[in-house]
Amino acid sequence: PCVPWCPLSPAGAQTTQLLVDPPWTPAVLWDRVTLTCQGLGNDDAITWYKDRRSWGKKKGLQRITVTERGTYTCHRPRTGGSDPVRVLNDWLVLQVPARALLEGDTVTLRCRN
Image (cartoon, rainbow, N blue to C red; front, side, top):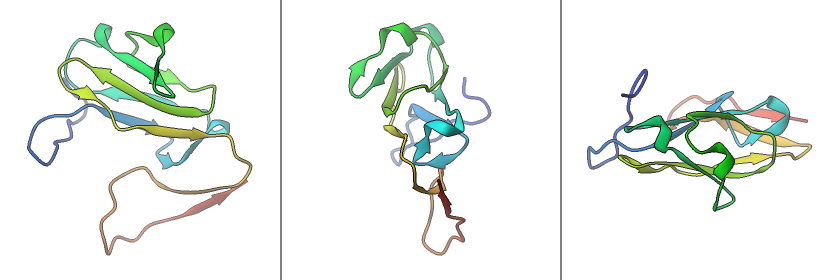
């Protein structure tokens, strides 16, 4: 089960979501980023990928703390693969909230170094 919610794809099917904490994109290493793989199915069957390669040492974990820059995804058997999340280690980053934005929304940008 998804806690506290399960996002729906446009077709109405539940999908695997990779949640970012703190909730800013792009994520940066110096924020001590935690990724959570949400979706349906047994947590023991979660597979993590870093830079498109299976990350075996993290198999079965629902939540990870990122310690290296790269592009991360996760896969759950019942809801499939997540969209990728990039984690940077750049010295200057312009960030936006890690949520869906619609035209007309007021948004806070963060320029950080």
